[in-house]
Length: 116
Image: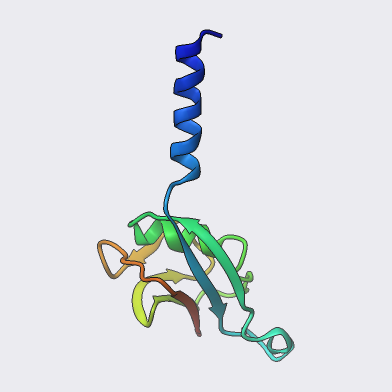
């Protein structure tokens, strides 16, 4: 590789490494008595900044929200106390957005409320 290519690759790596990340404290409601043992199911994550609420909900929910049988339940996702979207059932591909964009602060709390 020539020197120019190496410098470009180095610049790209530094740019992506220094991309802004936000700290998120993630919690959710329990879905049954046995699930309550580990409540509030707290996780602390660092994610890259983005503004699409559906992407945030999908990114956080896929591996965090438990599968619940039945059809008449939903998960209401709140970011810092404000509702940003609703997931009907277990379908994270069909999220009802309640805002057009999300705004992060220094400390971000995301909570999934379980409704049945």
